[in-house]
Length: 531
Figure 1 (spheres, rainbow, N blue to C red):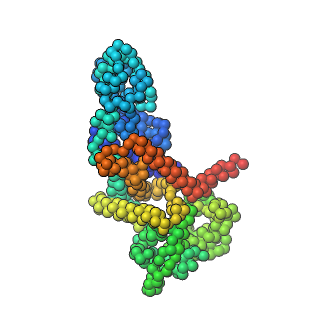
Figure 2: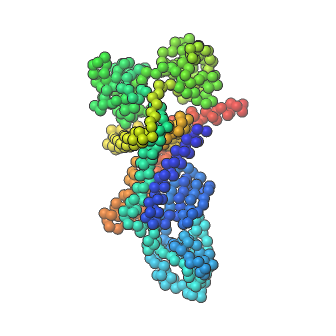
Figure 3: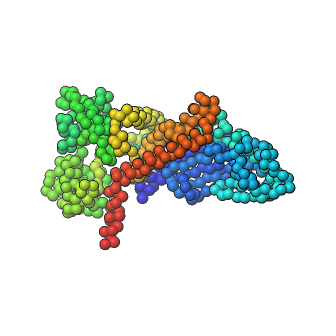
């Protein structure tokens, strides 16, 4: 339930405000906006206000604002129909598009007057008008006298068409969507700070190594417990968050790490490893007590009665030192009934838990660690200033990380096979959205702001079909002093669409690879239940 609620909240908010940006600036520019849709495909709900149809459609993975004159349809738009006129009686409506007359295509005609003259439409002869209205095609039959009262324009002469707007107006319409996505964090972060949000205390501390994974790259490089990470590739890091980002943008690479060991600075070279889940690490972490922070619904831990705050003392008579040792012990006990001795509010309890089998036949009980939290909560005015500052910092940070990663990928510093592991799609976003929703409104707003910034940046990439692609078209038109040909536009749009579909399939494949246990487990449980 949390996954669905979180996902629809995040996607709904981001798509709505992105498209609202395009819509508002288009209206301000006087462009005829035909549709405002949340989602793609078959419409679920729709209503019309004025000349615009508002829709909620079947596929919730985006949205669109349809403006007349965007796509070079080659028809004539009926701007208005005089009340009581013959055309109104015949059935013409404002917004109708005349696609054909007597079966003739209309693309070659630049004005309504030239069309009437060249087609030799006679006053007494009845003609067939093929009308496009929403998704319908309607045929109306009438004489020249019957169409008196309509005010129609070709795409080329229609002043309210998108392609006929000044370059500056078109540029503003295009970038208004990403602008709204950049703007949202400046709203969400102040609200988040006013509500109050918890942050793991270790994120604000100098990263001190409390665990080294056996046989990891860190162990091979000579890291020791107690080492404090000062720099990564000569760039200072102040906390675990910055250290994690520094490793993340250097997948499958040799990085130089400066540590403080008992007051003496020491330089170590270590190779980062990108897992198939897209996580880049060297095999170190902060010290974590074996204390339960949360218990997943429907998991073995939940069924056995494990609770938040429980400290794991022993597993099958093995003394538990920290979270990582505990995880290793559990992984070795897939599908085996295991005795847990826990400490709950000063009293020791015994629970029998059978870990599920997950990837590589490893055991998992469905718990996550407890982190000491620092609550960040401010008054009304301070939450605004803190939120604005946070939004600015996050935009700069995410931009640096994304473009730094892309630069390394283009120059070959990061192999494409490695870069591919870091691409996430809708399934992964849905899972994280659910976790954020479970954490409360402040956490959900924080995650939404993070995705909003990423969406804004990616939308400005110079790829046809994205807003950045349209910026390129407009820029080329400004340089050439004439628009690109319709053929060039159509070809580039096909290439851009194909690229985006390919990326989407790749992202979904990555999601399934990362989350296959989460996807397969419900089906396994259902089969077991049926048996």
